Amino acid sequence: MKSLTPIIATFLLLAAAASAQDGAALFNKQCKACHTIGGGVKVGPDLAGVTSKRDFDWLVKFVKSSKNLIATGDPDAVAIFEKFNKKPMPSHSNSVAEIQGMLDFIASGGASPDESESGKEKISLIFEPDAEKGRELFTGELALTNGGPSCISCHNVRHNDVVFGGSMAMDLSVSHKENIVEAMETSMPAMINSYGNSPLSVDERANLDLFLKVTKENQLYQTPGQFGGIFFLLGAIFFIFMLIIIHLFWRSNRKMGVKDEIFKRQMRTQ
Image (cartoon, rainbow, N blue to C red; front, side, top):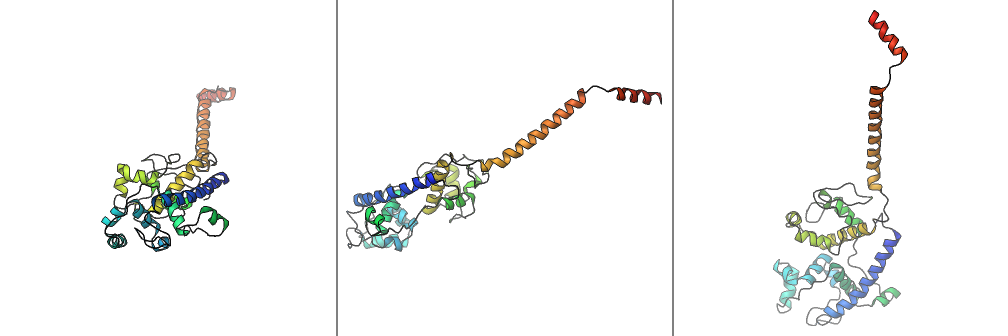
């Protein structure tokens, strides 16, 4: 993250620690009644190793709505549905960050955050959002998995490493809210038209969300690198324009000298 300040980096580390705590609490509240982590099949499957068997995008979709994933004909989702008496797992409204916290807890084998921090059990993150990848997705340096257009074609952000973006939609420099990318993708008509048949993946949304979060938080610390060049150019153009105006004004108002008058008389007598 090229422009990430130490203050924001510290904030994100604290947020990650809080996410680990929340993941354990959420698992115990929402998952423990039906699942174990290495303790065998319960109402639902044993979740030990699930984070290495399935990718992050699939797991998030299944947790949010197994019914929807089954309806798409996804073979893995259908197989689980058939194996467990055709009873779909209830849908959940958790944010991607909350689901990631639970999955990180599952990936650790059910270790508590204290155990993980002490080195007894190291949590292996199955997915870690990356603001720099989010920037590359925003600018189009990285192509979107399903072929959708890059954000910069319609939106701009004030960021030292982003050139001027489009003006067809709002500037996103300070617009970040939790899950803003998913909310825009599924609620704004222009976004629905653009991404309806080429949706963003869960990890792309998470990377873009983090990029917009860092961009918003970093506004107070950024240097005006993005605009410095154009401000200098506009200033130079204005300066030259003023010099031209002053020169024209001076020529039209300057008084005729004695030599000019003598020269004019000589020309008339010739």
